[in-house]
Image 1 (cartoon, rainbow, N blue to C red):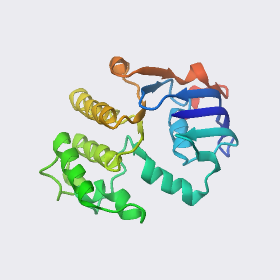
Image 2 (cartoon, rainbow, N blue to C red):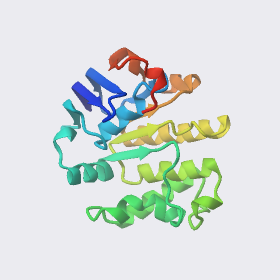
Image 3 (cartoon, rainbow, N blue to C red):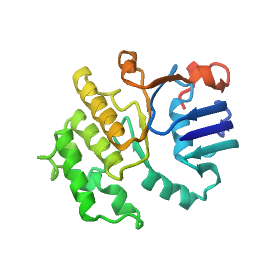
Image 4 (tube, one colour):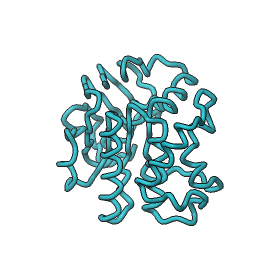
Length: 228
């Protein structure tokens, strides 16, 4: 479960302010987050993941007070509990597909690559249709293939929380539908909470809930001109 109370955040430039009085999302719910450009959708995901800290207020994820963790504890929380899918993939060019997917295990000593992890990797890449490309590097892959790698990396740890920041925004419609289906199916199989920022209103019926950030947040004026 995600529970946010009296959250307040602003960038150092003070050009953008985000206030969320209250937000609760039950465990396992699949939520689409919508709203105009600059209203704070990506900022909200970063706050929930602990990449940003609020000035005040509370962010609780499955009984963990994320805002109270130290920097090291927040990094460990993100690696072990959160699967983050970025719009621009965030793959490492010099690593192979296999190594990119296993990256959470390579950068955090608390995660061990055990036989179950290898089996999970095999299932994920087969489902994603990239099982024959594990030795390739990102530069040799299409946009859709790289996004599938990013999805597999986010899911390899069996996260209880999946955060996706416009993961289909740079894909053609057909590939976008395939990637979205992959994310939704995997979230359902893990009973993971999914928060996905999207501008594709045609796919909102696939989610349990649509959350318009303008309905729950108090924003600084002229949010359309800000790109947080």
